[in-house]
Image (cartoon, rainbow, N blue to C red; front, side, top):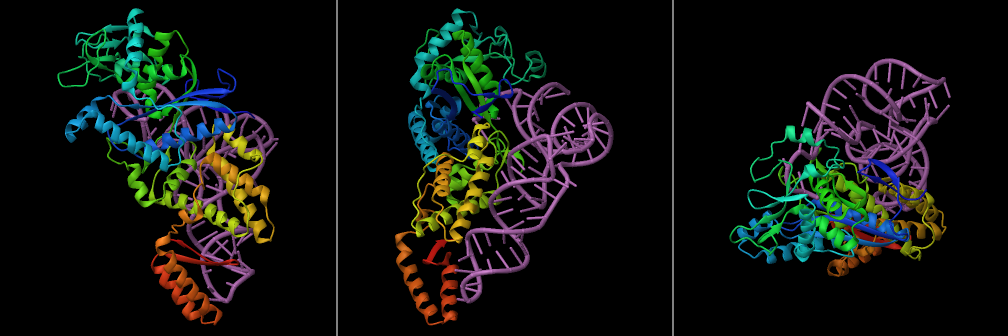
Length: 458
RNA sequence: GGCAGGGUGGCCAAGUGGUAAGGCAGAGGUCUGCAAAACCUCCAUCGCGGGUUCGAUUCCCGCCCCUGCCUCCA
């Protein structure tokens, strides 16, 4: 079976065939850089990192674009609150974003455009919309998109315009002809950042930037457009309207939306205040644990985030690293080679089913451990395991790094281990156990293996 | 209210018209001086009620419950 992707627009799995054979263009909506990213953002990063890695593994040359929204009301407000410039704020947050993404083992996209770098593209798109009568200048002076002019509006999110309007509590002012219309170009108030445009100084609306940047980097029609489920409406709906109307094109060919991160079954969000920033989580767990947690749930399902779930993911990774250590002890290279197991390929090809793929990974873990127990050297199985790990971006650290082995206390611990060894040789088990207990209290766990005693942090 | 997606063992989570992967936790066993790690074994009939079928957790209908979107939101 070749790759199938669940397309949000048609609501079914479709065989993936890129526009240009061998090449894939993918655009993922990034973040608005006014604050640190939270676990929900982490999910988008990891989900599309998996998509990116898998497409590359399948041999595609992938152009992966993920934007930064660096003009926006929240940014303006936050910068003012902190008494710093907008540029200082966005630079700082983009740096933090990269730190988080790197920690999570996410490969950098091939392009990471900022909205402010694409003013001209946005203005041109708005001009095209104006010229074709899809946009108009509202009473407030803002340039607005006329939703009613786009017949397919609502298709992505499955919304009926008339029902939307009926239930709408959207403010009726802002000079809109229709409550559903949205801003393409917003006139600047004094003191606000502004760019010159044919309609006066102002800044772009949120939606136009993604339409403009995706087309600028990937062309008017490209393969995959992704983002969080909450972006479906109205953001992606609006993106489609703008791009399709401006370019007479199809715009994105496959739409992918990842599910939310929940806490106590509720969506993690800023407004509910039930969110954790990525860096908060990384104070308590290695970043890879968070990545593992994300892989344990299918990307379209809600993901339950909890301390317990994190501990579970940590324990699962411990098993993988124990095996990595064990392999090293018997002189087996930790390197990817050969083909991926068929079951793994099937799982990944089935709309990136990472939970199922992980099942294959752990079946291999057991297989390899069993062989090792029997004194065999399952080189092929290990190489397959490593290959799978690389696709998933896990088990990429050194064993020492994972188990918290560092130079500072290593010498001390080694002295204790040596001392215990002497005691054991003298059959003074009471003394040996006392030493082990002493270290355990300091969070150091000893394990006696056939090739000597090793230690790790609890 | 409209629309969408869900309810699988103690927790998390895949999946299939023919009696349910994997991870965590738990029980027993092997190994070990003892542990730890590893391995072996055990632990669910898939929200409820109908229907279709030789057979449904998987298809259809009804019901209950949960979540999300409809406003900025990954």
